[in-house]
Length: 471
Ligand code: PEP
Ligand code: CO
Image (cartoon, rainbow, N blue to C red; front, top):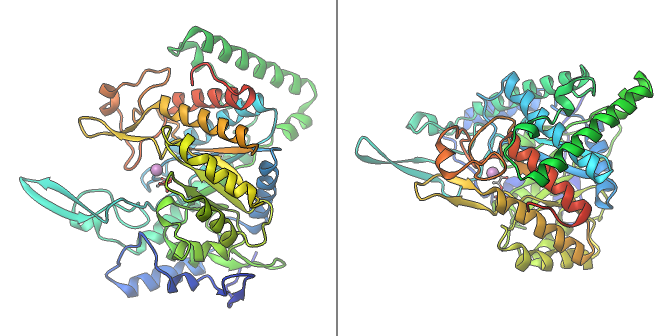
């Protein structure tokens, strides 16, 4: 397929848009590269390279999101806070895929509706930071360096060379995203998600987990009925099983580095508009969603479905204005609003936002990110999140949507398939003392394998019954 660059296009509102028109706006969270020639070389290279995803896939996802907006599907989005180039390894990718597939199976079972699986991966390499610089004591001296902005921009090690923004990392990020995607596509194509492979549906961790008896029994029941469903499908015959269990997988990342995104933004033959072909579902972060800023300018012109994070300080009128700027035609499947309020703020902040968007008749998919409003720092200075706060935000968010009459159509988690100790709580009993045991994330703390699966069960209960025994 040939995907070409082209010239400017007129959008319904907001004047002339082009993949580069964001350059005329203020871009929050951008870094200064020392060598503008090297930036040009990297961007040129990215323009020449083939796209990572196709417009067909993007349009298909958009159709699924349209279904989710009216409660016919549910979106599960998850992955690392910051993906790293070093983690582009078979085991890590396989484990991430496995946990997302298992969670989706729990949700399909509980909700009796198809689940759209979207990884925060194959490009989740750029991170917004609360401060542009970081100061540490090194050999008794106070040293200040640029913050770590993700592997697409600079490196995490605390030395001047690592923290220097390096334009070539954009090309390296693209290459690692391509390798990640290639492996995922091969795994899925080769039957990784096939029900004949026990790693897809085996939830036997429950037998060994330290969980309350009632929840354990509930898990065992789900596990048994999943096994029965698989047997039943097998009895229907091979072809049918494959058809019923065909797994599709989509990618997403925060579209923070607009040089990277716009270099892969193209027109495609036989379709209208421009596509960001680095990912299926790019999103705008809480720190970069200014209405007149560069990120909204860039995202308003692309044909992909786009997400926007909304924190507790979001003014309801501003949320409506964002939906108008990003989806002027109020088209189905286009806009995903990802709310991340914090368990203590959901009930105060969310109803007004949901009501304003609903009353304005805006079509959106409401997604809950119960991670980013629940960060805390332990007395010894470790960034963590409590499982109970995460579950509590989910419970309160479900209640708000139920009250307003809107549809909570998805969730957004930071998670990993590894046995890390970054978030506190859950059945495995990770405590504050355990945090140093296997804390790997270079950015925000992630749910580990067991915590993720446990949350899928809680969520499934919440969406089905409006209550969950542990939440
Ligand atoms: C993130 O998703 O890692 C993130 C930085 O989130 P937010 O924009 O919601 O703060
Ligand atoms: Co994060």
